[in-house]
Structures are given as C-alpha cells and as structure tokens.
Image 1 (cartoon, rainbow, N blue to C red):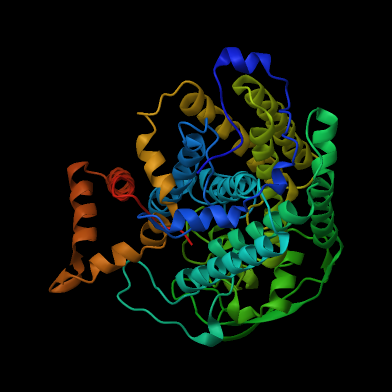
Image 2 (image 1 turned 180 degrees about the vertical axis):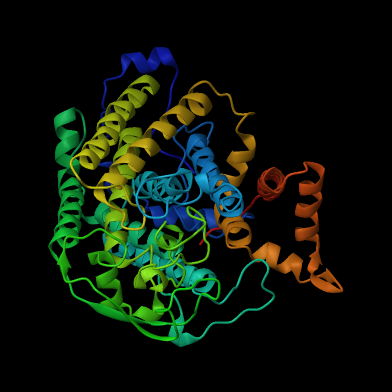
Length: 503
C-alpha cells in the first residue's frame, strides 16, 4: 500500500520546506478512498482482521520500500508488554500496580498509551477520504465491533485465570471496560478527523493551524465539559446493595443488604462522592459497574494497602461500593488523549524531516507534561480512575516523549534488532491482548490439570520458577517476563506467516 508521505535522504530532506507542499488536489480528496485501499489489501493472501486499538498503520517510508511506521508498532507492542507485566506481576510488586486512587504508577500509563497510539494511527487511515459518508459508516461499524468484543472479553463472561468457569448474569453484566473505552475514543477521534478537518493545503504553520483548528476546539470543549461536570455536579447521598461481607474484619456495619453512602457535596474527587461515579450509577446502573474497584486498595479499605486486603476496623461504608474505572464521563476525557495522538500523526503527515518531526514532538510533549504538573499543584490531583485533566496531560505528554525516543531509535537510526520482539507484538496486538491480557490462553491451559485444578502447567511453571529463585515475588516476575517473550515469539510466528488479526 502506497502513501503520499515519503522519507528521503537527509540531504534531500534538508532542502525541503518545514511543511510539505501538497499536490494540486488535497490529500483528503484522492481518487481512491481509504476503505477501497483496505479492501484491496484484505483480498490478498494475508489474514487481516483489524486491531482494536487502532487501524492499519500506513507506511511513511518511501513508496518504493513500502514500509510501515515501525516505531508505532514498537510503541504498541511496548504497551501490550507493559499491560501483561503490571497485570500479572502487580500483585507481587504493588508499586507498579494501579495507584489505589490518587497518583500514577507504571500501570496507570498503559491505557493512555493505547489511546495515544489510536490517535496517531487514525491520521494515516484517513489521509484520503473519497466519501465521508462511507468513511463514517466504516467507523461506526468498527466501533460497534470493538465495543462488542470488549463486552464479551470484559463483561464478566470469561472468569480468567484460576477460574475454570464461565458465564455472566445478564442483569449484572459490565457494560464498559478497556476495549469499550478505546472504542469510544476511536469513534470520537475518527469522526472528527473525517468531518472537522479542513480541505486546504498545508504549506506553512499558519495553514496547518487553520486546517486542524476546529478539531482542537472540540478537544478543548471536551476538557471544559469534563471539568465543568466533575466540579459542578451535585452528588447526593446514595445507597448500594452490598453483595459480600468481610469475614476477616470486625466491621459491624458490613452485611448483605443496602448500604448508605453520605455525600451531599459538590466538586468532590474522593472515591465515594465524585461526579464520575454519579453519572455511571444513573446511566448504567449500580449492578453494571465494576464490582472490585481499585479504591479497595486504599488505606481506608485495606489492611494490606496498596494491595487488596481485609477491611480495617471502622472502615468507611463505601469500601464495598461499585465503581467503574472506565466510566462514561472519564471516557470522554480519555478521548482527548486520542486527539493528542492525532496531532502527533499530523506532524508525520506534513513534516518530512526526521529532526523537525522530533523537534515538534518534543516541543509539544514537554509543555503538555508540564501543564499536568501545574494543574496538580493548583489542586487538581492525578487520578486514573477519574481520568482527571492533570492525569491526561501527564500521561499524554509522556506518551509523546516515549514515541519520540522510539522513533529516533527505530526509524531514524534503524536500530531495530533490539526492538524486534516488541515490533512483532505490536503488529498483532489484538490477538495477544485477547489471549494474554484477558487471560483466555492461561485459562484454557489450566483446564488440563493433574488430579486437582491447582496442578496445571501454568501454576506449575510459576511455582517452579519461584522455587528456583527462592522468592515468590522474583519468581513471579521471571514467570511474567517469560510470558511476555512467549507472546512476542507467538506474534513473530504470525508475522512470518503473514497473519495479522484485526477487526
């Protein structure tokens, strides 16, 4: 598949203007639509089912070489690897697990990395739009597919590792999750890329701003709407039905039945009384929210904080209340991370020189990162469950800096052997995510056991490594690292066979 964006030799690049002069017809009005190009590819011998977190990455190297943007594949593979690491080793190392409520750990950067990559890739997918209506229909269809896939994988039907059961009560199915949030971000960003980008040529910084100014205004509007609702909505007292008790705690007020949460506040960002949870309880219903929220690892709710543990004495009544970390309001804010990725993708499309690309990226990432820290100092805490504006800025700025570094190593200096495993994983991110991160494969393997369900290959391998290293924590870490390498090699095998699983 060819692209109008090329990367020439350094000498030629230095002679080119900062912003590439477009051909007589705008790149968004080419003779062949993006959908038509994808259909041609799908008719080839390769198996292609589109990846959930982003569309097919179009090549940015010269048309003769017909190569992909390798750094984005590596970035995506790194994101999947980090997800496996923090999910499977976070229990042994709580410091890399999700922050209980405020603050950010390694795990809290995974979701923004996904969304940032979605935004970058969308710019390549919709470089050429022959028919906006057709493109919109394709976006809607892919959004639905991705949302439904997330519903199947994370709605409660599959119970994951150490549970040889499956099935979910429809009355308690979880409507939102990681893939559903990615679907929402993809939809908002893709629709804006189709309808809100101007058709003018980009031959200067001013024309670049004019082309994308409406898109940026939408991102600012989403931020303003989020902040306004977060601090402006009044949260009344509310109650929930406690479905479980804590036998290890002496807390007398925990029993099956309705539990009252006292709020009557406005602008609270605490776990029980924030506007994010209020909107989800109203629109989704308490039964359809995540039933084991991360704030159960706070000091108020866990004797083993920052990990899960027994309820401490006199713990607040909201410790067993449901809360969805991928809620509606926070997902709208998360979509802004996709818009940041769009901007970085636009730089690739319009700026030809490697050095200038990295300069623009770095000059954008640092102010965004700094803005996040300034907002935190001014009183807006960093919170992944709420996806606060400060959290969005810090994680989006970090995403841009990491992509810049990977781009320099992989696409500029061509040091690709060091990142080959991550590149393979990034080219088949969907299948690895479903089998590994959603624990479909470990659960399948655990179905074959010796006499007792605990005696299976997965648990046996992990226990063996813990014995070898004489440490449960470090043995678990080595097991997870071996798991990551296994999935990289699995993705590499698919790549060598020309198999790319995408929606």
